[in-house]
Length: 111
Length: 275
Image (cartoon, rainbow over all chains, first blue to last red; front, side, top):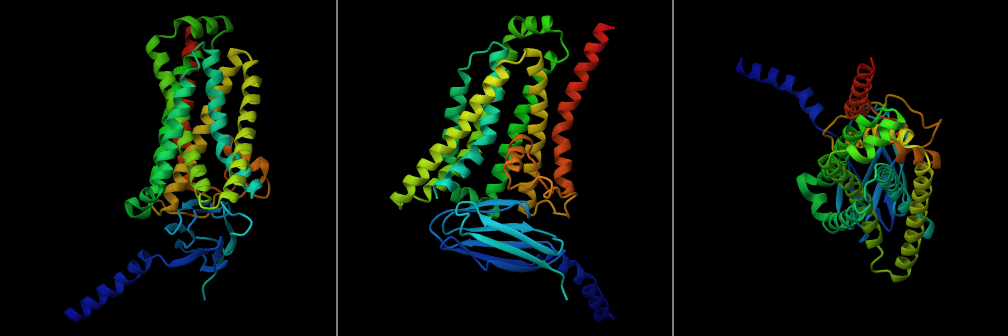
């Protein structure tokens, strides 16, 4: 009986924990380039983006479409929350090296 | 490379140049000395250097959200300074040209003048701190590459020059309009700038997940692209955002409402005095 109650409780808590866990994606900056340059993420979901700047020089992650901008010092890590995004492409760039540092976040419906 | 530096520096200084210009014209129209601008420039440059120097520490603070909290705080303090300035110049709205000359030149209490100047110093200093810090960080990246540093510095100087020239042109255009018209213009600018800065506060909090993003309320990127020159200019003037989320719009109105209330209150007071 107790076991069943616990299972029930667990089942109720599951959607909550699923809601709390924000999917994490990583982008690296190397030689003023973004890796990957196209990052596929689930649409309509809040996402935690971890940007690792492997260059010794600073970079600014900027996107008009995503409404984000953040300076990332050389060798440092930055966290940027984005979304929920409608399906589509969202370009981003490195403001300090705009010619080379270009990338796209592609929001795709899951399934 | 040099063009990148020009554009980056220009983008950073455009908003600060606008704020400096309009507040300098305010001092001139109200018969204040312009010495405060030097204090503001020194304060702004020193604090921008400190922000850039401690950029790693700031970025790591508060679980990696230090940069956003610092920016949000700086934006917030500039909005507060604008509200203080608006409150002090509001009594000059809706006056006849004769009353205005009298009020502006002679009757402004000394304490009010000092508070107004202090608010102007804070508005300029804190705006510069944030914008110029980014320029230091950008230029600092070239420290180990003398050839690139040289072209970045040249580009930066050109960008700064263009920004300063645009400021100077605006200054002389504004100097020639009447005090009465300028007070209206200043008040409108303060409303627009405060609203724009408030949406930036929301943006910082969205970025660190403190506020939850939702789908943008509208998307005017086809009408005015944020990449375009008009987009950049509108961004500096009114914090233009082609696809703001609802929370940004709420922040906009939170900042703008006190200024509008001050304006309406003055208008009613003036109307009652004439009745």
